[in-house]
Length: 173
Image (cartoon, rainbow, N blue to C red; front, top):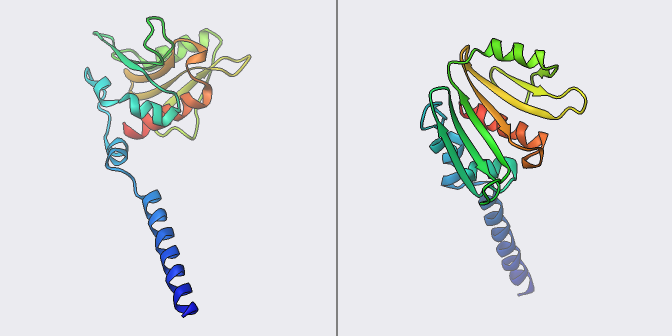
């Protein structure tokens, strides 16, 4: 009788462990949707990048999104608070702006241009030479259009967060 009781307890234990393992590896429909959706850089780009996506990728909580749409840029600003002068993370589509001219300007400012294997596709990372702080990351769409991953102040996000965000956005292009 003790053996049967132990077998039943062991079976229940294995069944419970199996359920926990299964639920941990099965992504939710929302996670699948975030991973699979491609970003189409256009005037409606900001509606394609949710604050939940930015929070999940960077670990930085986003309170609200602001947008700017004009002839030369579409900017998606991800604000950390509801305050008017809140720090923010920016994803900016630069339209009809030569990538090569921008690179030349960066070099004239004595900044450093590099690439990073964590980011897929054609891109370049701009850093300050003295401290290695990332100024921005540019994901090149074509010779005259690119996405810039940026911030308005240093405390908005650190280098690692910017790299994670650029890598995640690049995978969705």
